[in-house]
Image (cartoon, rainbow over all chains, first blue to last red; front, side, top):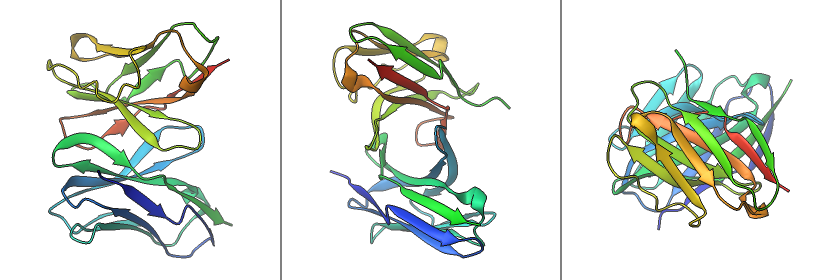
Length: 112
Length: 113
């Protein structure tokens, strides 16, 4: 059974720092992996989707990497801003099943 | 363009009542998903629709839950005889096709008193 883990559960850093959020999964037979952000009381916003054949994806200050064989993905945020404060979730789509399997999220606070 | 919309945004209901939650997917998206996010827990898959195929209902927690998708577009999630443990945020997502990027609506916060 696929399990997705995100570490740390919470992170607080000063504005301007670069940071890394981690996501690990137990079954490497994934189709793709997505990173989302969730703002309090709001829905989910898709940030990046990495296909299983890809190693990384970039969007602006965000860079997501995928090491399928070791069951890891990282989300790198450069030059963090207070507006980046949110909960970040990763989710995997399995080869055999289109149901997204979710991590519990990392709550990120960027201090001005 | 318009994203995924859900209504109502908030719903408070008494235990034992039935509720209907609505989802309008992005136009042209053939796949539609319902998820539930309970306080202190992660998201859980409920049901999946793809085109005119029979839906995958494997995530529905009990037979009090049902969903339909009319004309391959709007979907309604119905919870009968609501219980307090049904209190959660219900999220709808759509994607162009299976395994494509999923786009989420703002969710419906359901509170059962």
